[in-house]
Amino acid sequence: MRAIVVEEPGGPEALDWREVADPEPGPGEALVEVAATAVNRADMVQREGRYPPPPGASPYLGLECSGRIIGFGPDTGDGTQPTGGWAVGDEVCALLSGGGYAERVTVPVGQLLPIPRGVGLQEAAALPEVACTVWSNVFMVGGLRAGESLLVHGGGSGIGTCAIQLATARGARVFTTAGSAEKLDQCRELGAAVGINYRDEDFTARVKEETDGAGVDVILDIMGGSYLDANLRALAVGGRLAIIGLMGGRTAEADLGRMLVRRLSVHATTLRSRPVAEKAQIVSEVLTHVWPLVESADVRPIVHRRMPLADAASAHRVVESSEHVGKVLLQV
Ligand SMILES: NC(=O)c1ccc[n+]([C@@H]2O[C@H](COP(=O)([O-])OP(=O)(O)OC[C@H]3O[C@@H](n4cnc5c(N)ncnc54)[C@H](OP(=O)(O)O)[C@@H]3O)[C@@H](O)[C@H]2O)c1
Image (cartoon, rainbow, N blue to C red; front, top):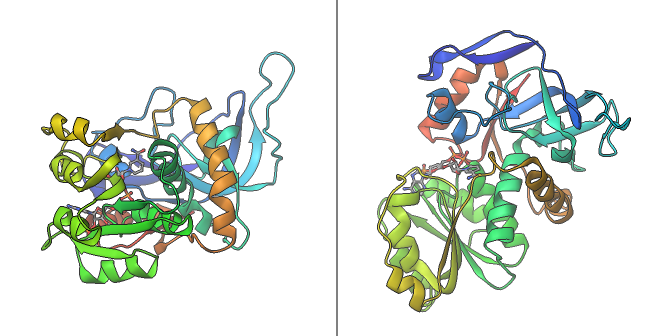
């Protein structure tokens, strides 16, 4: 098969489309012929050599894909061959630990999802990573309920566009930050009630103003260190902060006094390094709670641009420039 290989850690020019060995599915894994994958911010960090794949994962980039099942791994030694109810020929999309930037990829069967009705096969590659990250952090960890409020940082990101739609569809009031008026307009079209341009507004002050001084119940944060203090000040009593990205650094000081008096909690998670069983649990919840909203078009895959996988370098340049809203798809 062909795959995108990182020659030497570095810039987008390090990405090379070339012939490599086919992957071999292990017990409990399916072999998928990839129709499309999508760019995630983490791919850039892996390309630069700063986010190595977890043990046992594919060496290639790509945290999600869509495609068709073309085989399964061998039986588990007890005469059974777990397929999770899937069959050769099924069209699927999948949450991956890596390997999506290739013509074929192996995936534990618990990380496969059906293509939602109304979504194209290639378009579906834009969904697994954002749906699983947003569901697991905003709802499983953050416990966001209807009638509560959510602040989504970076509303124009792949993650942000999914979080805005999903939280709105489940009855929350959504606040979001972004770096331009155009992105904020698009976030409002997706359902955000309040858009805050982080370049010229203090988001904590604006959140307080919009909530009569109370603050928001849950924050989905991609900045980490640089936003920690401001996030804690923007939370309501009992508020929950879910940190999923460190674009603003990994260290910061926190006012623990504010946290205990206001009963705040801070969570930080990453999806990729979770055990297979935990990923299967998240995928199963996404199928139950998110897929119906995708099929009713309340939550849509937001695709900024479709590009050939062979030209992943150009796609990385697009995402690095942050000109996009939603996802950049890479089609095989
Ligand atoms: N922990 C996990 O399991 C997990 C899983 C998936 C993704 N993530 C993380 O989630 C983040 C988003 O991922 P993605 O792939 O969706 O990224 P993306 O599409 O590349 O978006 C990144 C966004 O960050 C925004 N941004 C930059 N500086 C900002 C600031 N100071 N305040 C608010 N927004 C700012 C940019 O928009 P502007 O033009 O508005 O600046 C851009 O829209 C990344 O940090 C990624 O690593 C974590």
